[in-house]
Length: 195
Image (cartoon, rainbow, N blue to C red; front, top):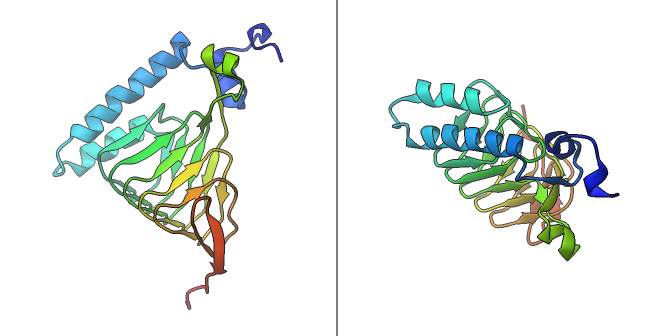
């Protein structure tokens, strides 16, 4: 595909998962807005939970009830991030939401976790010209991502799955398993809790 002949805006191309230029003025403005809101969120005192909640609602696409995102928190645009009820993101969460990031309900995210939707062309000329693309990330309900986990774009993690600390998730993981390693591999199924 000739990247320069596409009539869509760079934002439309980005949202479709196609090659786009992040230096487009519209995208630069959206990223700047997110940077300002993120800075405000991260600098809000801990004794102002309502202010934190209001800033999250302004920054993110959707925030469920009783969601906790401990600062510092970082994202690209914010608007493509949806977090379900009662989910908890520990300190230094990095959610690069060039594509959609869907986090289910009751998800536990350890410190220093990175959810990275962007990817860059292997072709050096396209990379040098500033083209990039992205693939979405979906985290199912009741998933636990241990500290330092990295999840790459295009990955879906099934509900009730646990990903061990320091793992790098490069492909989909099914529901109800323990996965660890680089790349993360399923080690065993998890027994559902008695209820």
